[in-house]
Length: 536
Ligand SMILES: Nc1nc2c(c(=O)[nH]1)N[C@H]1C(S)=C(S)[C@@H](COP(=O)(O)O)O[C@H]1N2
Ligand SMILES: [Mo]
Image (cartoon, rainbow, N blue to C red; front, side, top):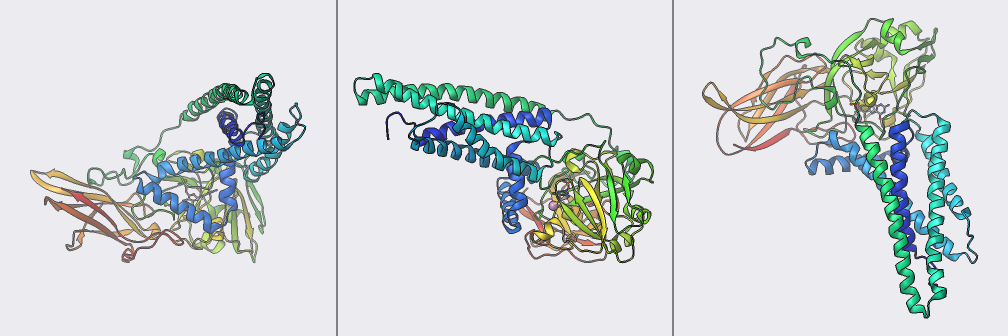
């Protein structure tokens, strides 16, 4: 190696500094102007493009790791994915920095201008542009602005890389030519390089901290929303049943609702230009605005529990709120499906899709298109402006951010069905212990055990608790919010000091007992009983 040539490792370091700054600026742009955040686009693209088996293993692994760390899956999964996304792009930036130095070191006549940097920037910009446009869901910025922004960021990365290279090379060269002997030259030159790298590190660190900090502050700002239902509005408000202390709220705030979808940043749909088309094999194609849906149809309110098929036994990917919208039957009748049509293909802004049979829609008037949760417009991350509800199915069958509906005679498998998950995705019964607490019941010490049970649209008829190897004992059930929600239960056990195992099982409305054998979420939903060990 000639003394005047920067080392490849130095190139990697420069790459690290620049990619950190690039991501911070991209993050700030996302928060300020709805521009794409490059790592999220890359992650979302990978999640859509990699084979379903690999993605499923990845999700399973993540859920298992988060659970093992004692973290709430619903609160940390997106954060963990975001960290992975940033690490992936960081790796690309570091690799590109190293490769850049390696290539320039081989050029006999290195150019002194920005040309190599512009070439590097353009070479990076092209794939990232393609990726961003392939996922193109998040962010409110228009395509032209998105494109320009991505090109600009990578060109800046490239030009900064080549300026850094020139500085590093000259730092070596200048001193090498004035020093008395080679050894001395080398040490002085390294010192000079180090000074340059420290200066560059300071500058990039400042950009990174300011970009990420400002972006983070902007991201935190929650929008002022309308008011949700009060507990006195709930249909079972006069049930005197008292849940065990520590049981989750029967009707939680929607801020606590889990979120699962294929996007790191949720798609932002502009209400002004959004239309719901009902097209294809229909006599009268429809194109409805959100106001049409809100004002021209009788609103349907349903209390609904939604659960993700990736939920582990006892997991937190389950939530309840009141959904408001329009019966899908009504819209389908209005459009008039033609003879021979069999299915409705529902497509989403993020490329997600699912197929619902017309027979099912005609049979089940509870199937709805929902535009409100808890009396407020759907939050962006929960599918604004419109999502579908199909009773008794896991969430994977129920698209959010709906942008298209086509009546057809084809049967196209849904997004997750294509990727190896259950075609029907019928909800498997689950019961969860939320709490085991010693309480005073009129002077007597008892152990209050409580939680929820859920069996899709089949309802819960009975919940039983077993302590250690004892008999199964019937728990008391609170009247549920509806036939479509979880049921809150409670079992009071006479206090007995020591270490005890509490296990719960449920029976659905048809009298069927919860499946005992253990199965992982893939491909049809987890089964097995939930247990809690508690020292009393
Ligand atoms: N467009 C779209 N809809 C979607 C998904 C998605 O990735 N994209 N994920 C589905 C899955 S797997 C689940 S569990 C539910 C979760 O809804 P929530 O995030 O509002 O709780 O949304 C469903 N609808
Ligand atoms: Mo899901």
